[in-house]
Image 1 (cartoon, rainbow, N blue to C red):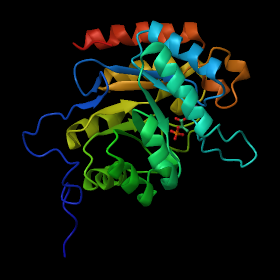
Image 2 (tube, rainbow, N blue to C red; image 1 turned 180 degrees about the horizontal axis):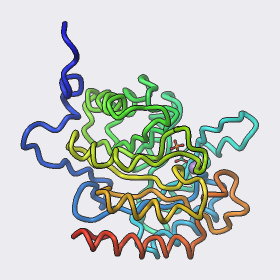
Image 3 (cartoon, rainbow, N blue to C red; image 1 turned 180 degrees about the vertical axis):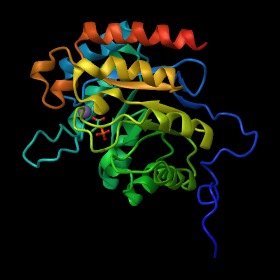
Image 4 (cartoon, protein in one colour; image 1 turned 90 degrees about the vertical axis):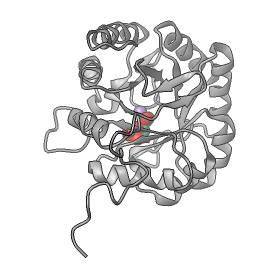
Length: 278
Ligand code: PEP
Ligand code: MN
């Protein structure tokens, strides 16, 4: 028994010599191609009208995938926990109104089936990245999976988490860097832009960045988003709310519709500078 060899622990996730990028399709949206995918929407689903209004904003700015949490992983048990199944119905209504597919978080392995029946893509949140039964269930659902990085997860641990999904027969995994905990308290988390470059080399799967949870503050979201695109991210996941001050979660990092539109334009310029589009 020697040291584990790189890549041997995660044979399905690791890029084999010469292996091309895997494209992950979510309805009409392709992750891993030349177009940088923009995902937008509120942190939490709060009502049907809130979700539909946010969806219009995302579509108008050139976003192609909608987000919104129906089940929210809250640090404090007395904080708003999400609308659950009712939230899923609001997401589906927003999809009907705009044509945008949606991604939403599934927190509990027992909810995978009900979420997979409605959602276009399942999000595994930071706090769940090493919930192995949840990873297995999400894998078995056959739905594309957006796998957030844990705030304390190394790149290799994150790759191993993805391996659980692939080992369950589901190759449609997209990694999402969202910042890690470091000694630096200036931002909510420290965006590890380097992990994008490392993952693009280590795995054939797409990698996107969530600048919202990394920054935790609207003043910094766009700068981090631009850095992510410049580093080679295949997409961005950005929180936006039509009335950020009234948002029931993550208000401080939620962009107004105008700020979201500006982010899209400015990241589009960065994408074009490196031969991509957004
Ligand atoms: C979210 O996307 O709203 C979320 C809870 O993200 P994370 O798991 O990265 O904290
Ligand atoms: Mn959030």
